[in-house]
View (cartoon, rainbow, N blue to C red):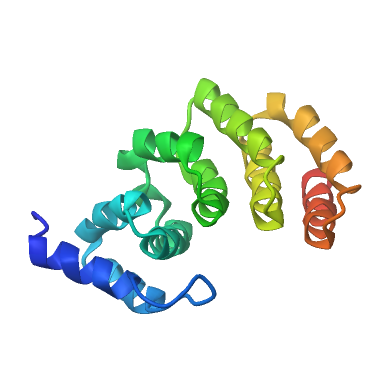
Length: 178
């Protein structure tokens, strides 16, 4: 089904307005996309929108939906890697860090995803850093060769000045070592 110009405009209108402290109508957008899965590609297009509020909310909705429907991500693997490598917006990066491990990845792609997330560990945003650790841990579950370097990153994160990063690292270490 082709997405009409009107559908595109309406979806982006629902994602716009307000400020970054609000999720706006993300729940409504998610319900709309859930009812019409063809709109998921449009939602991912929103991660490149000119409006940073739309990008942030599109990333939020896309990531939440991908937790329930990880298969929806697969046709957009190239776009997701491009965005993960190039997005300058922290709210987009923190959602992409959780989305990449939900893809079906080759060993080379898992290593690339881990490398991208390793770069995220230098981000000024504690949320980006914490979600990067979570993404790296998810990749380490899928690829035993990543386990030792990810455990080392998690151990290092226990010294982070951010309480959120330290807490996430502790939880992930328990998860990976049980």
